[in-house]
Image 1: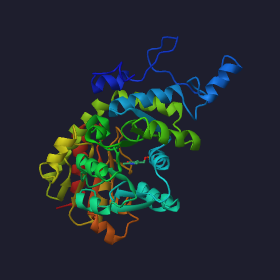
Image 2: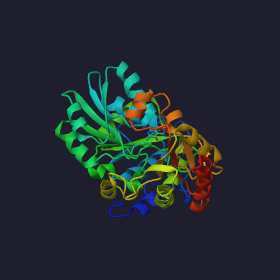
Image 3: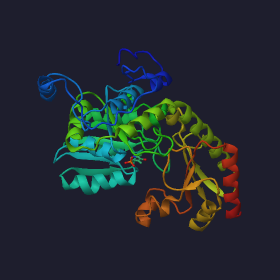
Image 4: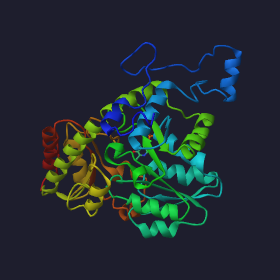
Length: 397
Ligand SMILES: *Cc1c(COP(=O)(O)O)cnc(C)c1O
């Protein structure tokens, strides 16, 4: 597969990689909704089961539709191997269960998806895996948190909702110097905008639920890396414990990949335009978007990413009251915490996604009561701006 597609561009791989036609000559990829597979005879069954002969046995292990998605996403991330999982959280769990053991230590950015923090601090802790949380952009803090038993560094970049960046190349160097692996949750950028493996990361994690699907239909995830760590260890856990992706979901995601580059470009264009406009509004105190010259890591974003992404946050003056008024006055933006959809969404982090943090911790991590997060979709940017204008009018001056 790697050879057949050597030298092809991202947009071509997104449409062509991973497909093997059946004897029917179908043009579009088929869905294989089958739990098991049939063998020619008893000897063939024995050869499959013993591993002497490669091939499908049972869909907890392999499925042709899932494999097509895996090979396509591996090609887009520039990785040797990909395993698909039933959700983004299952991808993180499978990575940890496949590669860590009791007594190992993890250093994790404190600005990761809330459920990821719960997985590390509550559930993995019960199995003897301890995690230290550090500020994402503080390289010294990462270095100081590393111990002899540290095995894994874990992060998301840009962060949610404040769009802070980690320097992936610098953290990969630190990880390898300390004998650790670096895992990057690439959900916000997708491989269309950022390829962590090329920057030195060892593992890429996805919640396919977001931009890979792109239309808010299915839950799924994936892990990409080399054939030893992902192909053997993570896959070994997955086929045993069972958080596999369904063939139907794999088909939705692989069709999503075909339009990924175009969609991400459109998300970026809409978001940059809204971010620039928001910066000029008198009711807005501050805008957080890596594509703005005012973003402290604008230069790093330009080096590390091929676009600035679809997430922008901003602070309105006056705190929670005005923020809620703005949200309630919009008519197009959906009031939901999901992202990566054609439909734009609007969220008040302090009372939803980050509502369980103490007020002190929220203040320390910069989630103010006036903060609003937008996940900008693919509607007309003109209509979205008018909708936000309606919201800002409700805030007053
Ligand atoms: C949504 C999300 C996840 C979890 O993915 P699920 O598919 O909901 O399990 C993990 N990381 C990030 C950055 C996410 O946005």
